[in-house]
Length: 323
Image 1 (cartoon, rainbow, N blue to C red):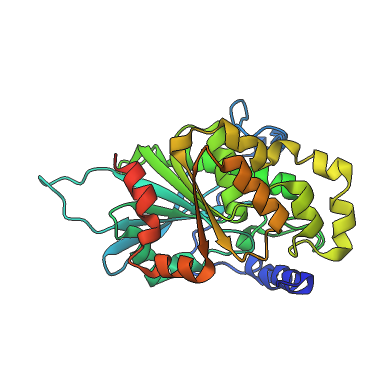
Image 2 (cartoon, rainbow, N blue to C red):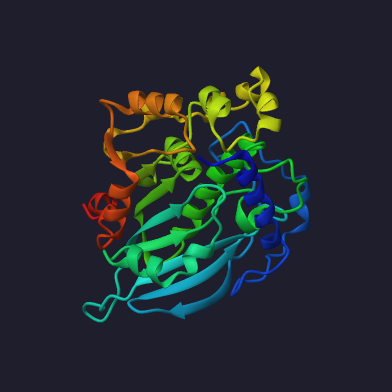
């Protein structure tokens, strides 16, 4: 089981990432002065009506791999919070002398994942072998995006901010992808794991452009999750299970989101054992999805075997986006 000490060590280990520029990263985008007057509401999941500053994406270069091309693009719409997008495209022969726009999948892994996996040749080959574009990024207050905060103020302690701003990011990323000629913006899905799965569910609840979402072990059922998840340090647990703290998360619980999503858009995957999610929270997520969505169960070994089987785990999303 993951100990609170180990979780805190992961946070501390992640801090150096914010002090140095990632290899190959683009330079930070200069935000216009008028950003100082822009407030980003944390009680609103949709970005409709929020005036984010207009900034131009900056290219961080292109890397040619075996069977794929990886492009690094830095976008920014929030002061001090640039986001690196890893856009990985399969090398497909152009028909009739022209390349058609391809469907894409957004990839968002759980806290405390950094962007390191997106540099992996094996990951890039795996996510593109079915002919889809992969767009990887990290959530707010995670990895290299965790900066300029007291160490006690981190992803989980600031969960309303972490989730809401990340949901805003998903919508802004969709806006950016719609401007590209190599991506079919009518066929975009999302794979989310852990906290990334929670963000995917919340984003799908406010943005129908996510045609399908594949969710693995999403966090949720906040009263049970905060009470028992080993991710929550014991010295902060009492504070975070207070009624006012849980009330701030009431509109950010997948349990309330699941019934409002179209059944054909969601697959919920549950892997056991999962030390991050308490059994009571897993049971409530399962019960909320039962009869509404496709729910699949696997042991950790079974899941890893599927993941290693020529990317078979991506088949469901691929089928949804290629219809």
